[in-house]
Image 1 (tube, rainbow, N blue to C red):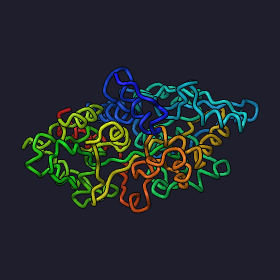
Image 2 (image 1 turned 90 degrees about the horizontal axis):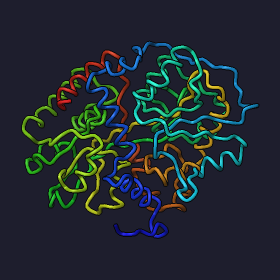
Image 3 (image 1 turned 120 degrees about the horizontal axis):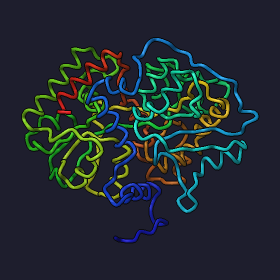
Image 4 (image 1 turned 180 degrees about the vertical axis):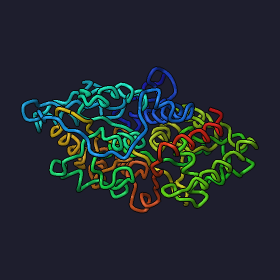
Length: 415
């Protein structure tokens, strides 16, 4: 294998190499693994997969249960996150931003990479939450659909704005008020995830791709198009292409989208619905164009000059991974201080340079430019106002809708 010299590469390229060479196989990025596992779990059995983990149907309850806060006498915060989702100094196996937080505050961070799948992780903490007990964690990071469910169940604590001045001031407008947590009373974004149209320029061989319609309707791409196995991304992108607002759609709208995708499946236009393996297919050219996750494409572009992307004029989908404080957490104030720390632009820039997903923090660009100008100029990491204005979020679903919609999508994909 060719030997690379890290000091000649940008942080984004180093991050891409780290993921690509890990375990000696093609990149299986954190976002790909997350989305594939979450989408697959729901697609196989709808909310039955959640019920199998003992997750009850979401009600209308809000307002978490606090415990005595031991932050003052116990200078610690227990933070559970996904793998490969924070800055790392490989030479010392440490996390520089966490070290800076501890040096400044005296609060030690017990950082655990114990989240591999939304449903699986919730199965671990559900018994304690259901029993009104401490999970042993002060911060957990969950994808928006499951974060919404915990909030509805009343299993996470309301945040104290007085401990979150940077978060309140610097949260990007596009993430400020999701319908499942208006005003961010219970959650703050860790990172955002953009869904885009990606393509392999060599495989396209001059064919123009500008929209989802091009993927679904151009006969020259027959059998070389990929969509994602995550319902919200594939359906949401198709909704936008059809002039339907993913934040306000009806059941009839949803059925129209499924019918359009089914037509493309029936005529062989769509090669398959992919999870974590589309990155390899796209790089090799087996897929000429596909619906993809922006963080993956940032990484692929660093190694593959043929890979590129577009944001359709109709718009693109954005989802989030979110920091929440579960009920009965012992160190709520310490946790809020750590959440707020990551909303300081300098810290957010260090994180963005490593993970390559959408930073939710305004004011990051000058700091990120000093670390990696290419990353700072990338709209998939720091969207400008025009780019952010084109982003859309998939609306919250009721338990009934989630079951019905996932079952229809599973039938479409053959899951």
